[in-house]
Figure 1 (cartoon, rainbow, N blue to C red):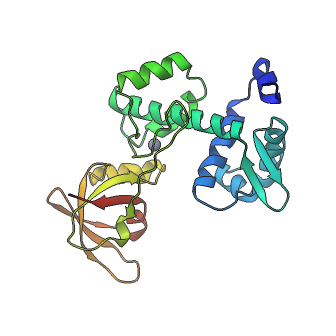
Figure 2 (figure 1 turned 30 degrees about the vertical axis):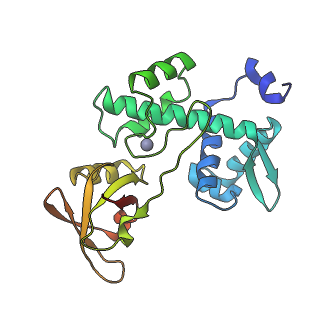
Length: 229
Ligand SMILES: [Zn+2]
């Protein structure tokens, strides 16, 4: 294959490029076209910076940019985004399981390490962890081939009361909120039952392992669950 990305091996794409590809992928996953302003907001940069970066990525043939329609990853761009995401989530799990770091701290570390992880170390970590498919937040870890299996879940904010559910995934990266959820024991794999739901998107009363807690509606919206068997 002779394309600009291959040529760039001597001039490898930077961590910033990888972060943008990952961001575009994650925004695509949320549905709908990805435009420069959404991307700028996600990356917390000025719109002009995002626009410049998208132009560069388009030169490398990593994204396709259609004015007024948005940005889309090319096959190669998606492949890189998924590899970085695999690194990120494997590292999160490794830091959590092997080094005992709490789940609210691993994201920040993985943000840095994901760009420098070698293939050999990636494989060693995957082996050591038994080829896991989800990270500590329940986010799917893409396979080496770039396949992703996304768990179907329902937001805890919408489930029937008095019916036990299991947490599949926590749609949060925010350190303080994750820490807080951790203090309530709301990790993937935990069983949780909604006992009461206040009207008008008010707080929920939940049971976690026999202990009752009030949980804000907006927090319950970030917890994807399925019915327990
Ligand atoms: Zn994660």
